[in-house]
Every structure is written in structure tokens, then in C-alpha cells.
Length: 435
Figure 1: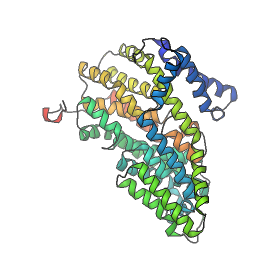
Figure 2: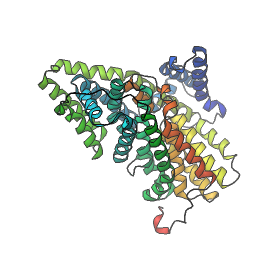
Figure 3: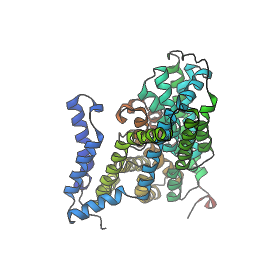
Figure 4: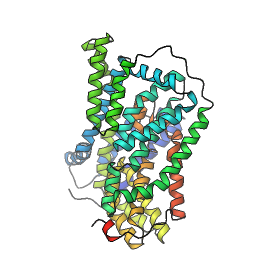
């Protein structure tokens, strides 16, 4: 379907969303009071109403096409399975026993840093930030309940670890798309990215170690039923081995069901009820994701992203400003789409043209796009990282944003890399470039 060029009006649904959200929060005195689902609902109505040249059914069809993509449906499946696994694991005691095991062997001052590092390794191994969140999230939530640690902080730690691998992993879809669109190798982009991600991770780990010193001592556990830990350990092992996140969640849920019935924690119908409880708990998250995807499809149809691209390019004055504009374009696209993968695809051609015109190394361009979209993914309250983590903790996504310390550290080193041209790269050999 043809894209309309509607200028500022094309991006106005996003402006409507942000204003609605902020004004409602200011009136209520708390962002947590604002239901994101309702804000997206009214923003979607507004987006449909301003779309011209189409009948109402066709406008809704554009909305539905965005919400019903294969990728969106796969994400919905993952979220529902994550809810089912977490709830059935909790019902049969898997989460409790795993948390007790961690608290027995791990000093309390190391818990924050350990959860972050675990998330980093799992996200690096799987290449999926969402996969890391659904694997580590239930344990972090259990630790928060057992130790009295701030739930928003614990969930934010999980999100930060997930973002590390999503940004760096060789099998991350964002990394693969960023490098392929800019014509460079995965390893080359990794070597550029590591100059930003590694210092940020080190700073974050030190911060968590310092914060851990003031954490109360973990409660003493007399014994742990190690057999009940098997489903969770199996999920972690499958994640590290690269098993698809949907498969490992289904296998984990099945293991919880079998072991729960063997131990008498529930019967078959009790297991089904636990799965249903977990899925229903993710219901609002699924609604938000579908509404957000449909809203962004209408913004794109109305030329909102094209309008932003034209305006941003007028800000370029040299290499540094060109790099900053690439970051800005990718960030705004991520705000509009709520998905870093789609954002990179949207801005990649423009970013390549800018980098060729102003002499920016393609490895740096790929790194800038990937890093900026990952940062935004942790700072918008409707992202596919914050929402699942918040849902597992039973809190609002906005409550996590103040605690995503790795994100702020990464943003700082991203700015430094642009200002001081870090790292200084040697020109790519012809054999290292992709046509």
C-alpha cells in the first residue's frame, strides 16, 4: 500500500502518545498510575482517525497488518509460554528451591552483580534479549521476594544483562542486520562495539558490587531440594546451547508439570490452572505489544518515519554530526517501532548513504545503529524488554527506567565514541567488505 507523505501529521500519533502519557502522569502525580494499555488504545484511535485516502476498514487493515506480522506473533507465543513456564515453575516449587540454592551459596553482596553477569552470558549465547529475560527474570523476582530487595531494581538488572548480549552477540538479529546492511563483517562490528559495551559493563558491575555491600544478609536455608531445580537448570542449559527460546520454554513447562505431579504439588488440572494463571498474567503485555505494532504501522504508512529522516539530515555539518544523526535516526525509529530490529531495517539505507557521504567507517555505522536502538529499547515504557521483565515482577515498566544503570553507562560511552572518534579504525580491506 502506498505511503502517504503527511509531514508532521504523520508522526503526530507518537506525539499524541507521549503527551497523553506524560500529562496523565503529571495529573496523577505518578507514572505508575497511567495504564499504558489505555494510552496505546486512544493513540491507536487517533492514528486511525488521521489516516486519509482509505476507508475505515482499510485503515484498520493497515493497523492489523502491523500487529499481525510473523515476528509479532512469534513474540506473543514467547510471552505466553514465558508466563506459563514461570507460573508452573513457581507452583511446583522450582523457583523457590533455585532461589534458596542461590542464597545458600552466594553471599548477598554479590547477588546484584551475579544476576547481571548471568544475563550477559545468556544473552550473548542466545543472541536474544527477550530469551535472557524470560530465563533469568523468574529467579531475579524470586530473589527479590526472599531478600526484600527492590523489585524494580532486580528486574532492571535482568534487562541490563539482556541488553548486553542483544547488542554484542554474533547471533543477535540486530547485529546481523546492522552488519549486512552496512557491508561489514560481524567480527569487525563486534570489535568496534566492545569499546563501548565492555567499559559500560565494567562500570555497572562495580556499581552493583558497591550497592551489594549494603544489602541485608541472605536468610539461612537449612536444605534445598536439588531435584526440583532441574527444570530451571535445564532451561538455562538449553539457552546457553542456543536452543530456540520457544522450545526451551515449552520443554521447561512440561518438565515442571511432570515433576510437580510426581511430587504431589498439583494434579494435571492444577498444572493447567497454573499455566493459565501465568498466561493471563501476560495478557495486558500482549495487548500492548499488538497495539504498539499496529500504531507504528500507521505512523509508517502516513510517512512519519520518512518525515523524521528528512528533518534529521538537515542537521549534518560534518563527520561527528553525521554520526550523531545516524544515532538520532535509529533512536527515533526505535521509539516509533518499539523494536530495535525493525528500527535498524528502517534507517539502514539512509545511514549507509550518510556514512558514504561523510566518510564514516561502515563498522562504526553498524555499531552506532545497533547500540542506539538497544539503548532506546531500555528507556521506553512499551519496549519488548521492559514490559516482559515488569510483568514477571508484577510492577510497571516505567518503574524500571531509573534503575537501568548499564543503559546510562552505555549511552555515556556512545557519546564519547562520537566526540573522540573511538576507536580509530584502519580502512577495511576489500576482502573484509560485503557487497
